[in-house]
Amino acid sequence: MIKFANVTKKYGGTAAVNRVSLEIPEQGFFCLLGRNGAGKTTLMKLIAGHVGSTDGEITVDGKRVSTGRMPECVNFIESGSVQFNMKVSDLIATAAALQDDFDRDFAQEMTERFELNTGKKFRQLSFGMKTMLTTIIALSNNSKIILLDEPTLGFDAIMRDQFNTLLLESYQAHPRVIIVSTHLIDEIAKIAERLIIIDSGKILLETAIDDLDEKAYTLSGSSSLVMPLLGGLNCIGKTAMGSVMAAHIYDNRINPPAGVAIDRLTLQDFFINIVGGKRNEK
Amino acid sequence: MNDSQPIFQQIIDRIESDIITGVYQTDGLIISTTQISKVYSVNPTTAVRAIGKMTDSGTLYKKRGIGMCVAEGAREKITARRKDAFLNQTIDALLTEAKTLGISVKELIRAIKIKEGANNHD
Image 1 (spheres, rainbow over the protein chains, first blue to last red):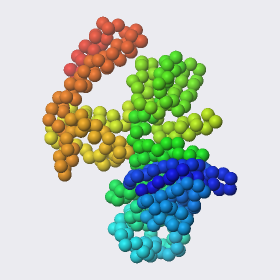
Image 2 (cartoon, chains in turn purple, brown):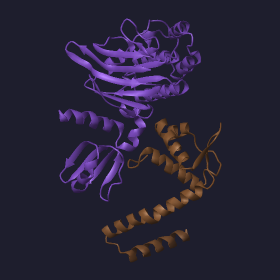
Image 3 (tube, rainbow over the protein chains, first blue to last red):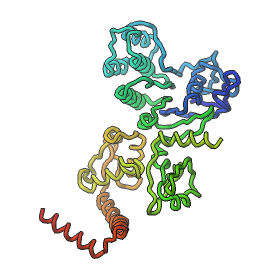
């Protein structure tokens, strides 16, 4: 469905996306994680054809993407994106008129659930409500590929929870490609299926989130007990305090000996170790 | 959910406990994956994985168009496996901790008998 073949995008002399090869063969709910400036937004813009690649080829549905040929099946929502300053109800009606398979029922249900005042004009809405409306319209469009760049930025905890529920329900009702970038890692970990980690313009990891449930863990205890276990394991980070250490592992689970505790790593801690760890090696 | 076991394993443990205690009967419908992900606030794919593992092991089977049900003999199998784990691992852990604390096996057995007597009077 989406394919990157050795894609580079440079801004000036800096590569925001650096020789990336990535394939998303079928529908899935992806979360895209990376530090600020890691290349998340550029990756999304490349898929949408909002920017052109400096080198390499991007195809969506087998067709080559460029700024001159933006794929119609892709809907890219930036955080803080704006709509015409019309009433909410008119914006939804316009979107429905432009798109044959617009899901009016879904749009209606969601505007009610999130208590969007349909009589208000776009500019009268709060920041969070603007994003909510734009996303509801995008999800109702039934586009095959939806890219959401930090959609929950500036949301309070309850809005984020509602928004994530909206995303999950929409995905379950209409499976397609949804890619969400966010810094609120453990919240997205509860709903997304797959994980893409990008760092310094390169893809560090692409895997099923569920895979980490078993494979991302910490072994902690006396260094003399923990160290010998690390030989055959992929250790992504270590913290030592005197004679006690904690080793973060991304590998098959082991049954630790007495005196060594095993704990699951949260996705956030996994991310910090795998990205931070790589940085320290340089 | 606690931190030591993978989440899918903890879901399996809870459903198995509910089968042993009779919350779910043989051929009875169990909680759906959507309900699991909502109730325990876990990723839906993790819930699907837990149920998949229980189906592979023969604990559950699929009733078409209805949902997942408890297989014949599942309760006995789970009970036997847990009994075995209790007699081995749990008692091992008990003995190790008792040794660390300087409690003799004799004292331990006496403490168990006193507890049992007290509980039976309840």
